[in-house]
Every structure is written in C-alpha cells, then in structure tokens.
Length: 202
Image: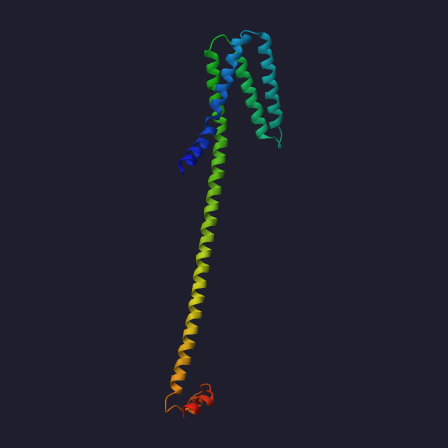
C-alpha cells in the first residue's frame, strides 16, 4: 500500500536534481540533430544563434538591474542565453568534442547556480518543519494540561459529593441513636437539625 507513495516521493525529490543535466543534454542532442540537417558551418544559422543568445543575455541583465530586479526572470533569461549559445556551437561545429566540453561546462555552471537555491529552499523547509513541530508540541502540552485540570476538577466534585453523602449518612445514623440530643449540637455551634426527624425517632 505504501510502496507507490514511496516511489513517487523518491522520483519527485530526484527530478529537480537531475533537471540541469537533462536540460543541457537535451540542448546538445537537439544541436547535433540540427548539425546533421544542414547547420554545420552555416554562417547564417550561427549568426542567428549569436543574436538570440546575446538578446537573452541582455534581457537577463536588464531584469537583474536595480533594486527591484527579478532574480527568477534574470536567471531564466541567462539560462536561455546559455542554452542558445550551446545549441549554436553544437549545430555549427563539425566535431563532437567541443559541444561535449561546452555541455559539461554548462551543466557544472547550472548545478553551481542551482545549489544556492536548493540550499535556501532546504533551509526554509527545515525551518517550517521545526516551527510546525514546535507548535504541535505546544498544543499537545496545552491539551495535556487542560485534561489534567479537568480530571482534577472532576475528582474534586466527586470528593465533595462523596463527603456530603457521608455527612448526610452520619447525621441520619446519629439522629437514630437513642441518646441523641440536638440541643447539644446547637450549643456546640453546629447547625440545628429539623425537629421533625428527632420527634419521630423518640
């Protein structure tokens, strides 16, 4: 029953770690397919990729400029610029060594940039889990204290009812004795008992 959930969780955790390598490898493969379909030593195609890569890098520079710069947009633009440059080299070069070298460098740079965001996300996740655990423990402690308090109140109420019952039983038993004198209780400062009960006994 729990096996599919474990496998799904493992894949969901591993996919973001493999995303940079998958992305750069995909760009390399597409560039080599483009190379095999006529892009090899094509100046026009290389110029197009240079222009697109430069435009994406410029957009990333503008997106990251100033205090209100958007880091996500800038990162996306720079990643697109690098991908276009890698695709252009992979499509233009006649050998495979240079595209593979650039692919490895791009993958390493991508992992280096992504590691910072992964650490930040991990810290936020750990802080959230710690805060949730602390709140759960605090609520559990409050519930235990309230349960103990309610139990103590119930025991006090039971003790009071038992004492009143025992007192009433003792008074009834005492009143049934032949030598019982209610006036002696009154002189001792105890509350006076109803005279009807005593007269019936005598």
